[in-house]
Image (cartoon, rainbow, N blue to C red; front, side, top):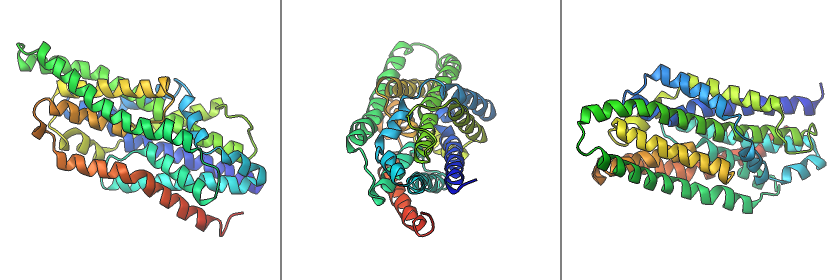
Length: 338
């Protein structure tokens, strides 16, 4: 087995490890609200999320192709030397995984998606490889800002409508009904998580195949879809309890109507961004701001803005932090790899 084949296998394995860490890091995004309101038990919620993550991964590959388009210079780098091109892809993954593990350890709901994109940009800049700033701005930066804003506003409006429609109903009966509704909204969120996040790993694996000379087109092979879907589903089932506590209880005290409003809004934003705009948005951003929006209908002071501020700071530094780690790893790797 030659060096290039070994490097491709290494990158594919590490990409699937990233996919697995994405699963347990972001499992909380899909189910934290349902668990905190006791609509679902933790184990049942994780099982449902794992299955629907797997199904969601089969719903398209447009986001995967956007990930590839961020760094078109990999194809040129592959023509000059496959080992160098693979080092770039490997560095991007190391940057993303490192930041994922740091934020998971401290229970901070940062974005795995933006960690990966930051890693790609950091490795690209460090290696003087072409990065498509147009794709980065139009397909990443603008949706990155737009999706949380839409999430906050959408959940605020949905929760306002719920409060008006059920203003004369008994709270206990409303809560009981929305616990059932949350099963549906959590399922929609889990499906959206698989649709968005598994595709990002597919994009990285295809980049590795192109860099190694095993593929010339940007089409996603069937085995890549199966392995990416399986890895994120397995990671999801292993659970992300630290982050689940932050999303489920520390931002606001959730009840079933607020949980439903947050989840249904977040799922809608995920589908629109993936299917309509082919934009790799963050599931973390997309669920956190709807939780804030739903809570703000009660009163703005109901949202624990101190916790929210810490989350926003983590969002802002995720891409540059992952980029710095990826660039550092690239420089070190170049001392040992071709």
